[in-house]
Image 1 (cartoon, helix red, strand yellow):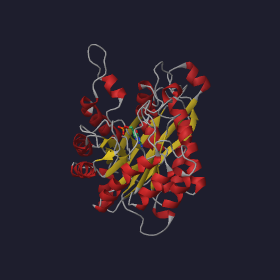
Image 2 (cartoon, protein in one colour; image 1 turned 30 degrees about the horizontal axis):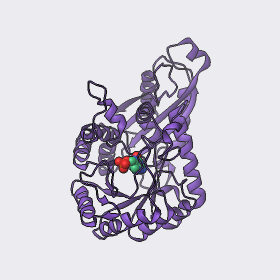
Image 3 (cartoon, rainbow, N blue to C red; image 1 turned 60 degrees about the vertical axis):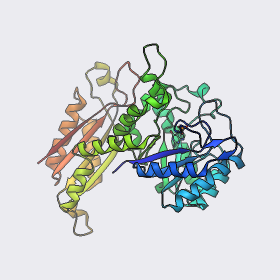
Image 4 (cartoon, rainbow, N blue to C red; image 1 turned 90 degrees about the horizontal axis):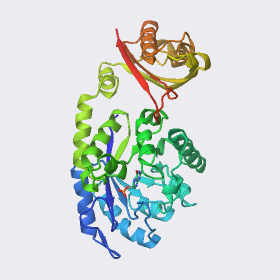
Length: 403
Ligand code: PMM
C-alpha cells in the first residue's frame, strides 16, 4: 500500500503553513488559496485538505457562515481542477455544502461528535470520512489530556466514534481513523501513539496521521535554552515521522510542507523491507497471492520473568503467507485455509513458554512454512503488556522465512 500525502490548506488568519495569511479580516484571497492548493498538488500531494477554522489549542470558533465563505469557493475551484479535495470541518452544513461542491473526503477532528447533524451528512454524502480522536474542544482540550493508558483509551474512544458512524449509515469501507496527535494529548501521549502505530494499523481501518509542525516536534527539537523549535523549523522532523508512518502502513500523512514528505516517502518505498507491497506485487506478478492475518490474540506465558510464566499475558500475532500460485478454481483445496492458520497460531501462543518473543516468532514462522504450501512467511509477535517501566504502546518482533 502506498501512503498518501494530504497537503494542508488552511484558509485561516493564523495557519502554521502560510507565510502570508489567506484571510485578512473577513476577506479571503481566493486566487492565492487556489494557487497554494495547486502548488501542494504539484509538490506531490494526493489530497488537499481545506480548512476554514483553526483548531489550535485555545482557538476561538469562527461563525458558520464565515467558515463556509472561506472554504466553499476554494473547494469548488480545486475540485474543478480535478484535485482530490478534503474538507476539514466539524460542521455538518459546511461538510454537506463542500461535498456538493466536489469535496471527496470529510475530515472531522471531532470524530462526528461536535455537530449532531454530521453523521447523517457523512452517511448521505457517500464520500470517505476521517474520524479523528480528540477530547473537548480547542478551548479546553489540554485539561482533558489525562490517560492511564493512552493507546487503549484512544482506541476505545475511536471505536465508539466508528460504531456511531456505522449506526448512522456510514459504511466501514469509507471510514478512516486518526488518533489526533496534539488534540488533548501531551507530547508523551503523542509519542506513545506513534510508537503504537502497528497496533492502530492492525485495527483494520485506514489510518491518517497529522504530526506536521506540531508542538511535540518543536519540544523534541528544543534549543539549548529549552524553548521549542519554531514551526517553520519542524519540517525535517515531520518528514521523518512521515517515512516512519509509511513503514508502519499508515494510509495518509497530513502535512504542511509536501515536498520533503514526498521525498521521504519515496526513500521509504525504495527501502521497504520484504514483507510488504514490493514482495506482494512481485508475488502477484508471478501469479501468486498473499494471505494476511492480523491481530490474532491468545493468552501465553512467554517471558524471562517468573511472574510472566505464572500469570501469563495476552500476545497478538500478525502473519503473512505467500502462495506461489493464486488459486485457479474457487476452492479451498487450492489455497491455504486461513482459519486453520489462525488456530495454529493460537496454539503456538498458548503452547510451551519461551523466554523471547523472537523465539516464538521464529518457531511460528518455521512451523507455518513447513505446514502450509506457501513459499514465504512473515510473522510478527506483539507483546503489548511487556513488563517495562517505560510508557509504551507495543513491542513486537517480526521474522520472515522463505523456502
Ligand atoms: N490537525 C489539525 C487540523 N486538522 N485533521 C486530522 N484528521 N488530523 C490532524 O491531526 C489534524 C486535522 C491541526 O493542525 P493545523 O492547524 O496545522 O491544520
